[in-house]
Length: 225
Ligand code: AP5
Image 1 (cartoon, rainbow, N blue to C red):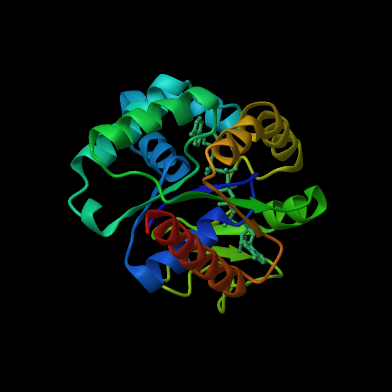
Image 2 (tube, rainbow, N blue to C red):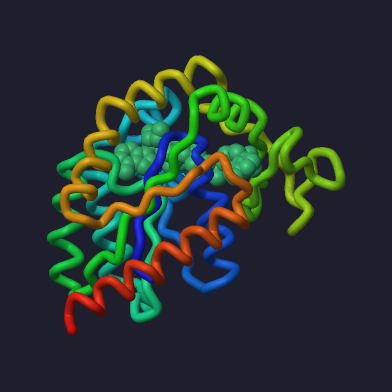
């Protein structure tokens, strides 16, 4: 499986990525997580990107593209496939990704576009909680942890992301509509867009995605014959 997860903030990209990892053993490459880890470590990249991430603006293309290139070039499990969560987010990032994938000879199967309405996004993001240790995702009403403030998986402390407040969520949405919506058109024009309903239950959504990927594979094989 060689896919990209595309969609607005709160579409459920991270949640779906977690389920794909569970079922197929492919680890997500999530730019948001990588940037937050860099910020936590206080590295030069972390210091450079902090102001963008905390305000909901995009980190400059060259910074995230270099991160992705490094990950894809050094990933020992690339034979199994890859799953990019949160990248590309601009057309130049998408074009640069094409060049990297060509270089490593691992062409994309498809870009999965998860569509969700704004009220659902706000409800999901304002209620989201994340484990500080293992990154597991929770939600105050949709998926509360068994023990308040503690992760079900590892017992780590659960926190709210600083960019998950209503004002920053609206900035992230504006940024998404301006910069990332054109990326959807880009993959549609290449015939590589797989659309799924992000408001569905995430396990049902995974089944829809797997059906869609199998259908795509069959169609491609028919074209070759
Ligand atoms: P990033 O971390 O990628 O944030 P995002 O795209 O805004 O996406 P989220 O992580 O907020 O949402 P998600 O779709 O993963 O939803 P989740 O599964 O968690 O990026 C953060 C920042 O980093 C950016 O603003 C930018 O500054 C920078 N950045 C990152 N990549 C960049 C790039 N390529 N270029 C430039 N800058 C970049 O779900 C949300 C909640 O909903 C959870 O609580 C979950 O439990 C719940 N939920 C999920 N799915 C369902 C469902 N089906 N039903 C019910 N509840 C659900």
